[in-house]
Image 1 (spheres, one colour):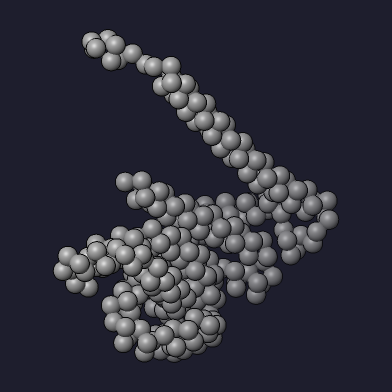
Image 2 (tube, one colour; image 1 turned 90 degrees about the horizontal axis):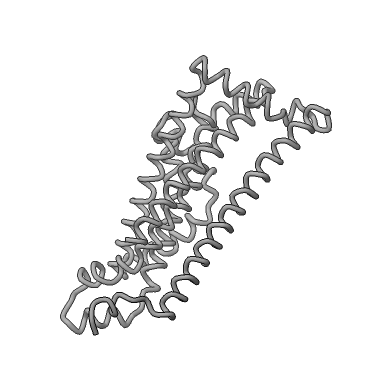
Length: 276
């Protein structure tokens, strides 16, 4: 068989390539339709909200309307009032997010490593997980002071336990047969963790980051409600106190946008790491 014959495409291969191209085209078309529907839903909701406010179908003192909200955001951005609040909240959220994920993962590793420690800490973790974290706010304020530290402490209280439970559950669900193979070849607990447990649980750890994005925002905003004089949580409380509900809604919209950006960044990181 010569080179020309080898390079020829068989009918079966051509059919397969055509089916694959059609599948990709259909997938892209479906994705475009989904994006278009999402945009229509978003702009339709804002349009209906604007109309309801203009026509006084809703109480504009409480619910405002989009043009008024965006005007307030633009004014406070131009005069430099808004960006420091956004920066403070984003920094606190990012710090709590990273520290909470790392601390929870390390604690899960320690519990998996030591069955004795697991049995000792198990009831405490269950109690802490069921405890309303907001109730710990006054303790953080007194113990850590009314500042960034207590806000990050509140965030850690929310994120660490959840991360520990999710990651440790992933450790326990690893196929025992893989562990037996490492033991047959003389590997100890360290090798089991390095070669089996951690690689198998890596997707779960990455997925936990997406959960912690939302939890970190909850912890930071609650902390700012209690102690902060800077941040989006502070603006929400301030707007409520002076009955400026347009400021409250503007702060909520900014939180939604920034939180969505953080979530998409983590999702992008997850896709990159899973497709290596």
